[in-house]
Length: 256
Ligand code: MF3
Ligand code: CO
Ligand code: CO
Image 1 (spheres, helix red, strand yellow):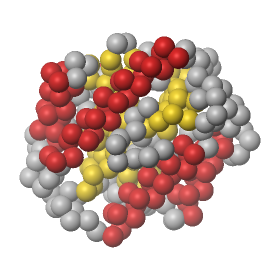
Image 2 (cartoon, helix red, strand yellow):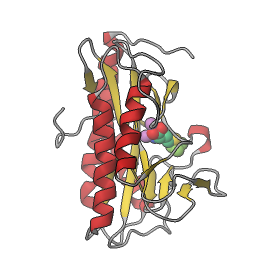
Image 3 (tube, rainbow, N blue to C red):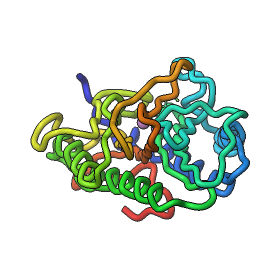
Image 4 (tube, rainbow, N blue to C red):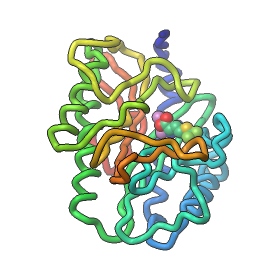
């Protein structure tokens, strides 16, 4: 495993790409309504990245992925493929995952949206998953180990009777989409890689209301819960600073 340390100049470029990805998530909010297809959301974000931001949608053609964003509804854990046939309906939850390339550097972020009215059990799953991400982010600083981050996420999910997806994880990011290290969302304190200033990676916990088991659909991308119960995910791209963390994909509604 070789974990690269980014220069301030590289982090400056990641800040730009990260801000662009975050802005896509802010921009799309008004369109996430009952009756819209996930293909339409993909088209709107694709056009925004290419025509307004002058960026590149990283997912499009990445290892053969056919669309510009991932749209994961209800029991879909991650990597849902936008489709004309998938029409959002009242009560759904959806994760939209956007990765933008600008000037050779990547910004990767996702958030959950409610479609129409929110049920209290969906609201709780979405909120606890966001808290898992935030608790992980709070620990990021030189000297923290990746096992500390995995542990706090696992602890928070399980103490709420939820489970942590094991097969997919966060990742180093920079001039490549997925770099070392792997950032697991479970683990033991005081184990794993020790963070150093200049490391850049994502934290992106996938938390299931039921069991942790996953199933890959025949399309080769869509990952679902085996038990059909809902799943939530939130993701940020982070840089380790001298004293803590910079959230490169922060949205204006967030204060870190
Ligand atoms: N954005 C996802 C991540 O967080 C990766 C999506 S890869 C794709 O790492 F090909 F499905 F788009
Ligand atoms: Co990611
Ligand atoms: Co992502």
